[in-house]
Amino acid sequence: MAGHQQLTRDWWEAHAERFDAFASQLVVQEAALGDPQAAQRRLDLLTEVELLPTTDAAEQLATALVREQALPANASEDALHLAIAVTGGVDYLLTWNCRHLANATLRAEIENVCRSMGYQPVIICTPEELMGE
Image 1 (spheres, helix red, strand yellow):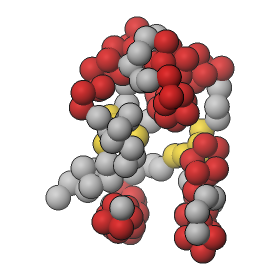
Image 2 (cartoon, one colour):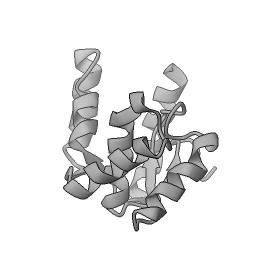
Image 3 (tube, rainbow, N blue to C red):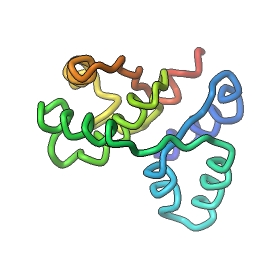
């Protein structure tokens, strides 16, 4: 976990300027958890990031991702994270959630559900994958 945290800091410091960063209220809520000082550093970073709304379209896509078993029922919040990114039209979803999101075995079905609902799927990857090194 410490390695992931360091890679994430490295990405923000050296690579984030190459991209338009977006987040959602779900990300803000997650960032506020844990050690208060670390949480404040995360929240400070997020003040500079545009927040995508949780729309009806995102909620419908999240429901479809679970209903069609692209993601398991216990991953409904992960489905909403993904759906907000997809319906918001972002190119990449950065995550260390390799159980439900950055998971090669789930990718094809996630993409199929997104396309069946009329959306272009995002590229789901870890910050390390998006460093370009």
